[in-house]
Length: 280
Image 1 (cartoon, one colour):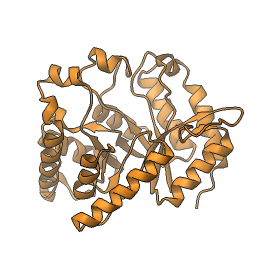
Image 2 (cartoon, rainbow, N blue to C red; image 1 turned 90 degrees about the vertical axis):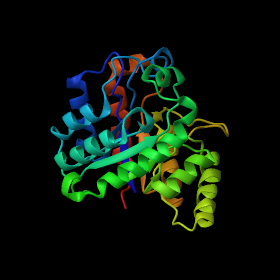
Image 3 (cartoon, one colour; image 1 turned 45 degrees about the horizontal axis):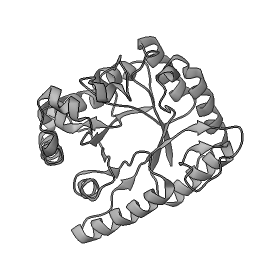
Image 4 (tube, one colour; image 1 turned 60 degrees about the vertical axis):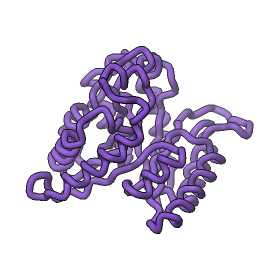
């Protein structure tokens, strides 16, 4: 099972030098994947969670591709309705070729209503637009003479039935974000049920979980995966592997923008997990 890291590409402490150090730290610690988030217009609803400056994901990942050699690069998640599908197809294919085949396209429908309004995209139509755009992206990629022969995996985020159906029909992996273990198990069962109903193979499991290392164990049935002592976090990873997870993305950002001013805290936690995780 591959471990990856969600790198903050936003906030007061983020700049090109810090992004470079993030990438080199993630790769140096042996993680196999580095992913960043997506927003275009930092409207008030977005800024409340992801404050400016915000570095656009394709631009950011192109920069990071040039300062890394091995680690895969991806989006968690690209908001598909925000861009014309041919633009996404072009940027994704170019980034995959420039990085030597290291790109993963994680996608979602989006949630920030004010941002949709600012971009002139119909919020209520975002699910339908996402499905249409993904089909158009795949159709464009079929022209290998233009877009290349890269096998770019699509990871589909979301946990509602519509998102699970989208993952079965249009994705190589289901990429749920920060679900509790109980909800993840229930939704994974539903994913496999839907795959059977649709006569399709179930996509791979590639969840994103929090990473918050504590000195002592965290008690309570509502403890999120990835939060707690090193033993608890390793136990969470073992459980995800037993559920068939192909990749797990660790998300060390816990909601305070000032965290981006002190990335060494997250790097320490990532180093602790990397040192103790038993790779198969």
